[in-house]
Length: 228
Image (cartoon, rainbow, N blue to C red; front, side):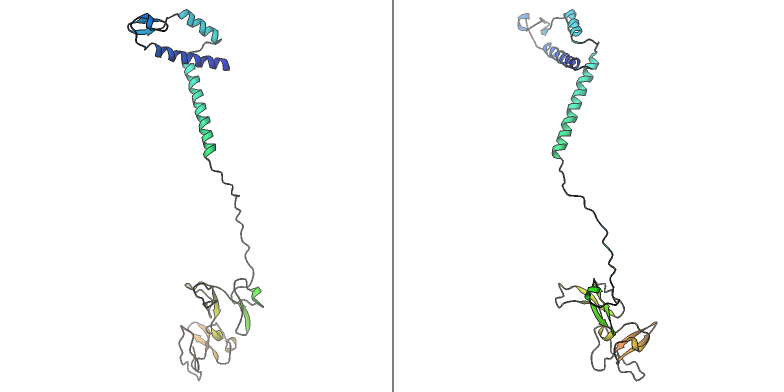
């Protein structure tokens, strides 16, 4: 539909509304009406149908119905409202300027773990390089509650400030409780590889010193001094 035809539709629609409103104005005589006549107490416009048809013919080259005029006006209102809503959305949307975060897989450290051989602390990314049963091995971090350390190690704080210290799996003194298959696997001359149901572990002498917490000092027989 051409633009001037749409304008004509709108003007005609407004004209119809104005006429409907005008015909509700009360009156007592013709002089009280701006145009038309006073009929039965209401102002009524002159019904010059010939003039109305001429106006319609001048405005539109195509025949237009009132339903089409209503549809055009309604479509214009809908389009206007949708455009207004789009503007509101653009004004109220908060743009986040954060760059998309790229989560990269952290490289798996290939350095030695607990009990693996080392030459210095730089070889132990998670702990320290310590002497253990005649060799140097890595320690590693641990949870003091779960205390999941290898056999022969226990979870101990790395500093006296327990509240802020980190914890590390460290070996018992002199290789106590380390797995063994012969006495030579244990740390010193007064340690023994003792069979405990199912496995053999290193013990340490308690003849002249106390056992670490959690261990008992007992005779094992066979001429062996008391062991933890």
